[in-house]
Image 1: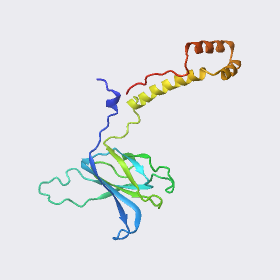
Image 2: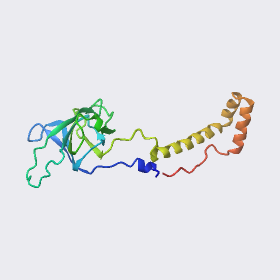
Image 3: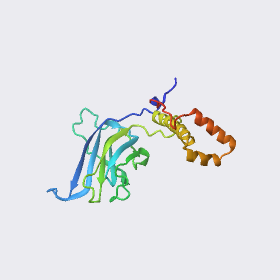
Image 4: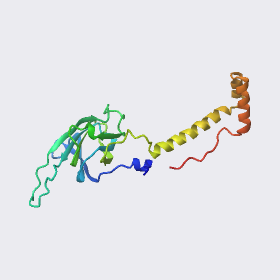
Length: 224
């Protein structure tokens, strides 16, 4: 049974809900912002997580905590109270913006894999992301477009995903059109080019110009 590129690159999304971002204050009156906020990612059930992907919005760095459950934990019918949650430091101060006062990295897409974590991402029930932005230039900061995947990104696959295949086809068409456009020159450019080429190359260029009336050829792009 053969596997198509679409099936090969189909990844398992993990269901979750998001709480936050919740800004942190120095005082109860909420007058002094700390430059920190918290986002909780609550999984619908304990899962093994392979990758966390998100888009940045002016967050300088993050800390990542994970809450895990042991096999069979809190599943006894006689257990009415859940055990206190234990948080583990998974990642400390991952930099998203190298220079917090500048734009670099402020809107980038970031990927964090389980291999970067200090603790295993097995049976994860919740993730807590601490957002930090020390610069007063960006009062609003957050991360968005969050995704969790159960497997690792498949960078070692031999087959290219459909998007890459389509892009390669389009690139080939653009290259052909560019070559044809460069060979179809105006009178001044043609004279200078002819003087720099051999008689055989000049003859080929004249034949090509006679066969191709326009600099560009309209080609229907492939559909993906």
